[in-house]
Amino acid sequence: MDKLVLLPPIITVALFMIKGFNWTFIYFWIPMLLIVPVYLEMDGPGIPPLSFYLTGFLPFLFRKEIYRAAFNDMHWLDIFVYAFVFSISWAEIKTTSFSSGRQLFFTNY
Image (cartoon, rainbow, N blue to C red; front, top):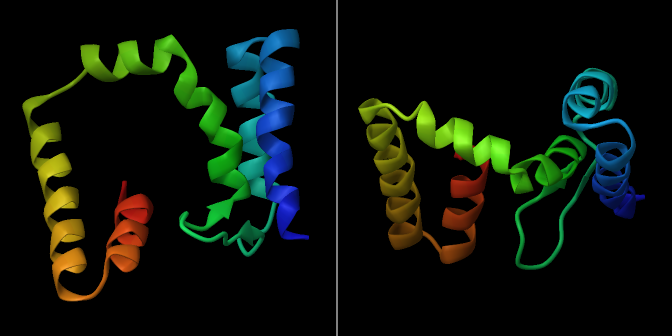
């Protein structure tokens, strides 16, 4: 059952090629975000828990438009947010373990 989480990225990539970036986001990812239950996730060794939302959004991160928009609209306050997430993760790594710090980083970022 937990391997079903690997299905949304395949569907997302297929819809990218057929319908396009905007259509896929509006008509596939947002309804999936609203309909699919939160507790469906895959917890593998050495990786953070992967939910339907995260795996469905991963192909969006490989689009050039995402990075272009992120760097064009970057504000100096974003550096403080990144530093905050890094410092919390670093503190968690130092006090407990690497795996819990990694989990905290991926859930906050």
